Amino acid sequence: MRPKELVLRCYAENKDGLWNVVCVDLCLAAQGDSFKEAQNKLHDQIKDYVFDALGGEDREYADQLMVRKAPLSLRAKYQMIKAQAHFSHAKTRLFNEMVPMVPAVA
Image 1 (cartoon, rainbow, N blue to C red):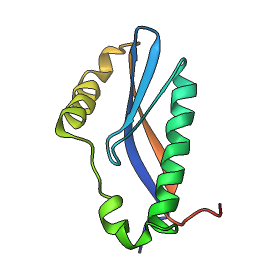
Image 2: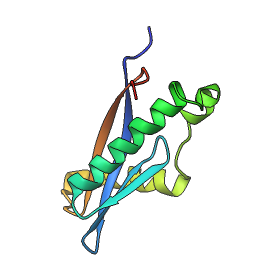
Image 3: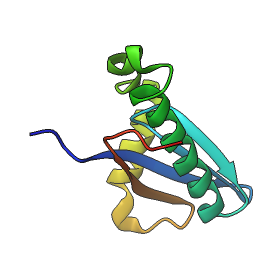
């Protein structure tokens, strides 16, 4: 049985008042003045990326595109933030993005 949703690991980091968010499972990133703004931008990027990979002009490369991980340094940063999560650091956050495993209608 195939999953109906793809759960993608993401983290956010506030540096000098600017939020940087990274999806470590698809190597996508966005920035915003607030966490919510950056998260929304990343969510839109992920939706477009998955649409193109599964139903758009890039669908013949879907097997490669859907497993395009971020560089090791960013994945290590995610794991470090995850390990320190119980200290409740206000400048970093972990979150998941849920994406349907069917292409959306454009």
